[in-house]
Image (cartoon, rainbow over all chains, first blue to last red):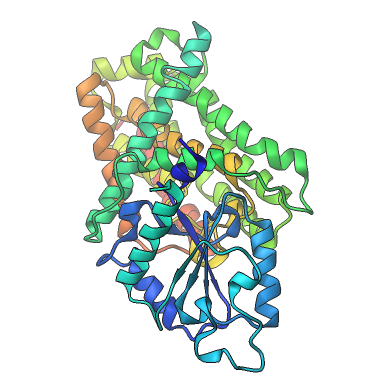
Length: 139
Length: 301
């Protein structure tokens, strides 16, 4: 059994919000509520990057957020899956032409999956997670 | 044979598997209370297996050796307790003089290891968690000892075999007035020993982000997880043996499940206390009941 397949059974998520407008964050919390219940798949939110198997990035990357994202990625225990969340995470969304926009997260660290939407619905989040899991298990 | 007792049954392996199942029961019941579906049966084992393939990261400003060794000491000490408690359940003749006292001291070591490891990690939030754990230990330990004094006073012995034998002859200690008060005090104390809500102050996921465990990753966190699973088996069994004996296999499992359900219900129906509230609760709320139960035990009730 490969490492990634073992990882896909129990994904602990660390949420990094870089100046997000909070819509994505609220939808993420929605996905953890009883109605959608991500614990069914062994997914839970953790408070420390050292426990994390998945780094979830939301919001637009400015200069300060970018250095912190790089730092978080460096100190995280590998193997680690990186997922960006929302339109801002995928491309910059509304803020692409903004003066303080540094670039999308995949310019800074390698990204495994994108969940687009502004904000993505909980169903989209679960769909994104299923895609990550499939990619990890090489289905 | 001794190694078999320590490593396979009733020591490490058996307790770990049973603890994983108990942890699943806890998570599933919590999920059902919140009208969720809950995790699959093998989820605790998936979690541990995953932790053992992860990388170990060591913080830059940490004291490396203490940081690495404290989870292992915690696991070793809980394994010894599991062996003593388990062997007394199968055949009390394996006990030795003073094994009750040894167990209570060894049960303290996982908490001390959490304090040591957290202090060694050099993280401000971890040191906050360590200081809270220290205060929590200081607050619940006295009430715990007071409650344990009741079976000792009633049987005039500090050996499991005498306490179990006494209960086989005279009915369980929890059947008497002093016994039931001490038993309830002890249940609330093990809630704090297990670091479950309302006493999960040192971890406090939502305010200090995992607290004492914040810098631990991979196998080292896995050792702490296994320790927690094993505590979930060992502590209730320990209480059942000295308060609510005698037990045979089927009745024992039912009693254990009942006690586990009580622990989970306490966890799910209470908010987290602040550390000063917890200290006040244990010293001025719970300790008087412990003292009352000791007095009742001395006058023979």
